[in-house]
Image 1 (cartoon, rainbow, N blue to C red):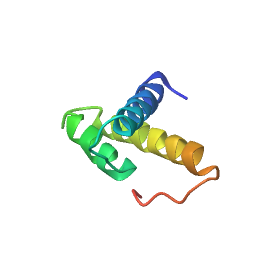
Image 2: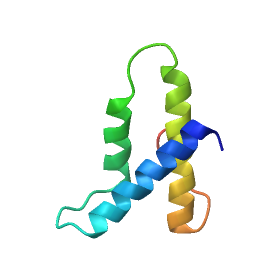
Image 3: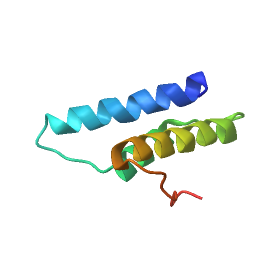
Image 4: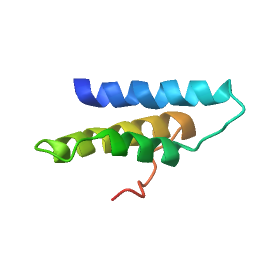
Length: 73
């Protein structure tokens, strides 16, 4: 796992934990879309999107317990 992927994994997990303690809930897809909006539209965007997608897959696998087919492809 690259540093950038680990960063996104940590962001996903932080959002999930925050949602557990708030009255406002959010799906993993909504967290993904919010993080996607934060990625600038400049050089390196493709690599950042790859890192975000990898982090999404890792967190989804951790939550569900098995590899999942990503709807992001």
